[in-house]
Image 1: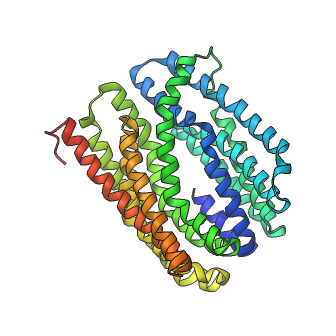
Image 2: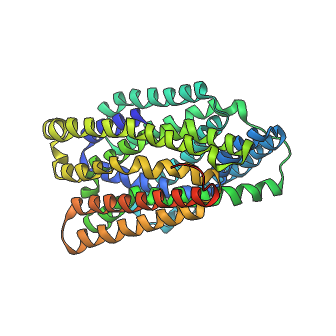
Length: 395
């Protein structure tokens, strides 16, 4: 994730706001398009460590086999569909949609690879997986310097997602599939994915508002605020990679919520420990030096970036409780909290941008407002759940 952050900054510097606006649009298509997986990958990410905790290796192998048998045809169908239906789109957006769908297919398989390795808690292999991804992105500086356009960005990111999937092949399974396992993955994974989709909306819907009301050029300028969002999500994602499978294994082994409380508190502490200093350092470096001196084309987005960075006080907490709700099967409450946060984000951003003329700062303020509401709801829900199931547990 650190390499992706550096890559995005360098790409923004080389290609300019106009091309970055197109790249942001391609990214939105591939990001929101993940809904076609119906949460199968998320179900695998929860059930593999859960059944490993129970010692049921046969069920683990079957879960992996069913996931693979769903994803490979899905990728093939997506590519065939975009080739077959390209005539339905206007010429000026046809290529953007095509690249978005191809990138979506790469994201699907990369997500499967990453979550599968994480589910077995093989962090050495996961580190190699992430390290090779970083090297590919950093090597992308060379072609980006020679050919500074959106296509170079696309190919660098696409290759970084696809080439590393080989590291998950150790865990692939092609044992006989089961419809019952497939239904179980949907029942577990789709609610988790809905929550993930809503959380993604919570942190990206500002870009849709900017694109819709202010245009592609302004979306390109807003890239610096989007990078700030990625900075805030970096530490919680890394901590989740380590702690989520551990939570699932503990819950699968004991079934007691009280055993998860110390782990959840540790997640939030780690999130704060890394996120706040990183956000402060990013603000000091980019607001005061990098943008004014080296990226002056993005100066109109500097204040929006600063507003987004205020989320460093809320994302560590709100995201920290997310893994807990997913593991114990209370995605409905997590989903409710996220939907309300998205609603506040959309309403606030829409009102500030469309009616108050607040521009990029208005879109960023909407995101910050949504994060505040989401975090307050997450804290209240966690306390209520623990007190309802384990009244004696100190909080």
